[in-house]
Length: 117
Image (cartoon, rainbow, N blue to C red; front, top):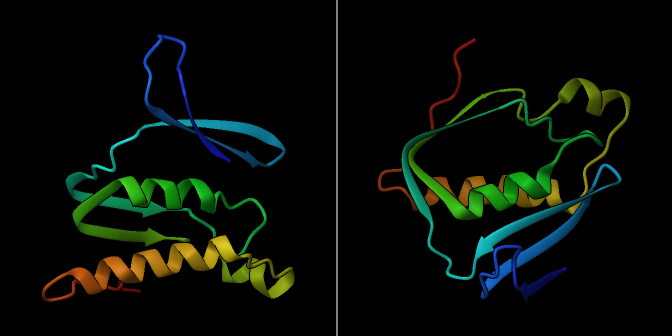
């Protein structure tokens, strides 16, 4: 659910997004403009896609508002151990994977550095 509201400081024109994550109401406030913040590097770790505890909605929101020259997927992005025992893969998990793949395809040439074992 997203709406334009006035925040506690009286600033108007902010997009307020409410989501239910782990039975807790999480409110995120973002400026209405869709300006993406750029960084030289972003490191993602312990995402655990494929588990019920994964906060894929928050990660997707982060990826929409932030970009980097290089995005490092450090470890535990997809939790294959848990998927084997108790698979859980909602649409939000697909959306995160698609967003990351889209970011790779936008690079010229695409940068994809797999982690060495």
